[in-house]
Length: 269
Image (tube, rainbow, N blue to C red):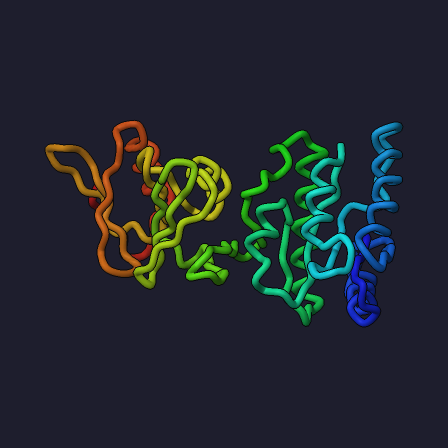
């Protein structure tokens, strides 16, 4: 791991949190982004030449640094043949959305604690294993941060960044290359990620595609209705919402409902 911070107190804290975690074998230190890039370029050249194990699997960096900022460092890393995972540990909440847009895997607010850092390290391990197994390609710039427990989605709201929990999302509506998240509080938020990507990413979180325009939380499906125009679902978790189910997705939805009955699910459908 490589820790990058221009303030000694911040660097010492990163070093302490990383070294105490059993997932971390070694911690390198850099006092600014330029020094970090010198270390990382050397490591990247070694890997591209002989495919040896990387010294630096991930970078834990501050955002605000003199010279190259953390965001500028992220953009340079995107040009590497084999870029390390990037996690920001920072006191600047307003940069969260930009961080994920430049490919950061996680965004941790200071003061960080051991549990929060461990969650980021688990995510790094999972990403490394997927790459080694030839799994899904590197995360696109718009991909969202994920943890084992939940996913947090940064959204722009009146000039500020709001962090929306996936657990609060009732359904998602496609809007071109964007998606609109409809939440349990009655709000909606536009995020820069296609619905197809969310469908794949949230499949294990019990979300299912019911229509080319809609992705819904299975745990909130209270009814499956049939009418002369076709099937629809009724969602709970707030004001009841009815959404159409396309013929293409009807069979999978029925199968999922049969395989995963929930308390309160009746015999409809």
